[in-house]
Picture 1 (cartoon, rainbow, N blue to C red):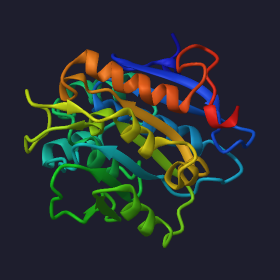
Picture 2: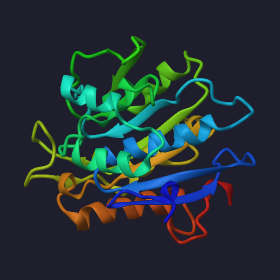
Picture 3: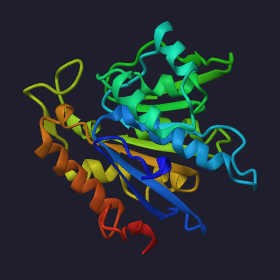
Picture 4: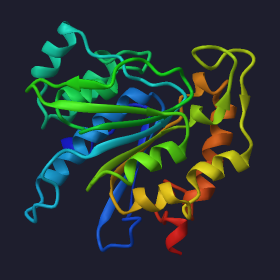
Length: 259
């Protein structure tokens, strides 16, 4: 198998037409452990960098929807390992995500920012916001960090900015409710299907905005944060039915809003 076709364990990838309706393709990846999003963001950045049209001159910003912030900064040891990472060796990148990124799945975002794989960061989350509002990467570049409790607050901010490209990232544990400070736990419940549709409906302002700028989409299933694999699959099914027809990984999936 050629190196460029490698997919890390517990991940799947589908190739679709671009959701903007433009004549180009895009990949959507389903990942079980959220930290493997790092692999796909780097892969997609490499792919975009090979374009001769100069469409992407800076890394895409990241828009992520997640119960958790996932904004743990890499320590000095991890930064040293990141500096040595071969960006063209997908076997090494997959192994790095599995073995060197935090198995708690909370340091992949700032590890990507450290290498300038992503630009500024926009997080919709239910976890209490921390105090980190910027992060300096390995070259001294500042990445702004913006956390929101809801989509309208994010959209109010985005309309004031000029953003050309984004990675769109959804951790489906966002669609759970829990009284625990870290989410999950034995008292976890699922939100209604209507709540999921309210966030990801292709006709809403967020999704229409994202569709015009999307470079790639990652969907993290995180069953241990959703109260088990059955809950995780139930949420994924709603997300899939809302956005795609036929289903992802059917070898003929299409964006439902383009049908």
